[in-house]
Each structure stands twice: as C-alpha cells, then as structure tokens.
Image (cartoon, rainbow, N blue to C red):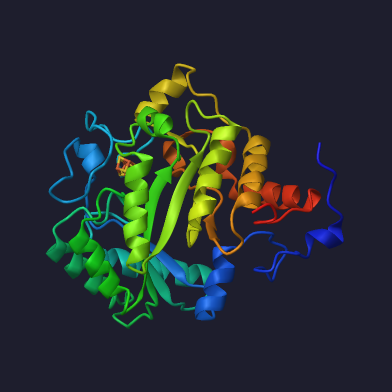
Length: 342
Ligand code: SF4
C-alpha cells in the first residue's frame, strides 16, 4: 500500500510544466501558457460516418488500413454516436451546435472564453475534400448564440489514421497556417493482436503511417489510448506507452475502457469475458505510463466520459474527480512525475 503523501507535498509539484500540485503536463497548463487563458472546447457532430462502422474499404478516401475490414459493426466499444455522445444534436447545423455548447460553457465559467471547435463524432476527415474545407472554414468563424464573433485560436479534428489521404493532409497543413490544428488519432493499443481483438480495423503500422505524415506536414497530433482492453495485461499497456514515448506525441488522451449499452463489448462483458480494472489498478497503470512518457507531451485526459445513461461499467469512472485524485495521490506518494523514467 502506498505511503500517504504529506499535505504540504500535495500542494506543490517538482514537475517543470506545472504551476499547481499536478505532476503531469495538463491541458489546462498548456492552454494558459499558449493562449494566456483557459479555452472552451466545444464538441461537434458534423454528420460524418466511419469506414469501420460501414465495413467498407477506405481506399478511395483514405490510406491502407493494414488489417482486413470486418463486418461493419465497428470497434467493439463504439456507441451508436461514434464517440460523439457529448455533442449537441447531430441534426442541428454545426454552427448551432457550437453556439449552444459555447453558451453552456460560458454560463458554467461565468465569462466568455476563446473557443476550440472539436470535431469529435465518428471520423472527421472521412468525406470529400470540398466538404472538409467548407466545414473547417466555417468553424473558424463560428459565432455565439447572439451572433457575436468568438475568438477561435485552434481547431481539433478527431479521425482514424487510415482516413488521411495526401490531399487532406496538405489541406490540413494549409489550415494550420491560419489556426492551430490538432488532429486526434485513435490508436488505443500498440499491439496488433489487441487491435484485431477490438475490431479496430487498422494496424499499428497504419497508425504510424498516418501519424508520421501528419507530423511531417507540421500538424500537431493527439493520440488516444485505452487501458483495460480485452486480453491486455499491465505489460501490454506499458508497451503501448513506451512505444508512444519514442514518438513524442504533442498530446495524449488516456481512457479507461467503458462498457456502453448496445455495443458488442456489452455482450462480452455480460458473458463475463471482460475483466475490468479497478480504480486503484487503473491509477497505478496511468502513473507508470506517465512516468515513461516525455514530460513535454500534453496530457489532455486521464479519464473518459462514459455517456451517463449508456455506461454499464466500470461505474467508478463516473466520478472523474476521484480518478484524478487517485492519480495525484499515487504520484505524490511515490514522489514520481511525468517523464521521471523517460
Ligand atoms: S473508429 Fe471511432 S467511430 Fe469508428 S468504429 Fe471505432 S470508435 Fe466508432
């Protein structure tokens, strides 16, 4: 059992990219130092689809996935809204989704903030280039609910590594000269056996290809990984972190596996085939992963949002504060920090 951290040590951090008690490079710290303030990130469902949900080849719109296409049911954990459960109603135009989301966040924080439109649901580069140009250009001049301009210093675009044909990458590089573009790429695991098991529909090599082409074009990349995937042990999760550490990604999101209703994973979990991590196991693994990652990598998330009514397990993930507190306490007790073993 970890030795409890003295109260005074919990208030400070030896980590260089921190001005609070955090021992890892938080997104808040990054935003404050990059833009001088917190920013409102507004999730958007722009009506995209996903080749892995459609079960189709992406060769006409993307690059080689490296794994055979499956039956079109998508990743085993994918919800009906393609990871866009926190976006506004997809039937609303994206500009209206943005205005509503912005209003909600301004009310929550009691002030107007710069905003980052976040194209989140499904694969947000899986469309003809003209469509992408229209949607992203519109996003740069989104307005609030009263029609007032909103400062938009950056834009985030979530997609699959096999949905990045050269013309799209070139266009994103051009867009990046007008605003800060971050492309979010789901990797989930660096092990091909796991990617096959979770029906990810692409290999690690395909991820690396997409990642490298974005980086060569000067575009910042945020990588997503998931802990607790079926068949993975602690060494596998550390392997994924070690593999990523060598790539030095700009941003990283680490999630616990969520079992959501009406997904293939839900059936596996109900059949007792998917043992889930406890909160303390998850916190311990995250601490070990962060310790071997470069200190410069910005950690956008250490816990995911399982859409309220859809989440079956693990229920401890609903208490995000408790998850973050367990990680903070564990780091402090071990006198560790992100990159200490990098
Ligand atoms: S890549 Fe994303 S949208 Fe597509 S099936 Fe997987 S989780 Fe769902």
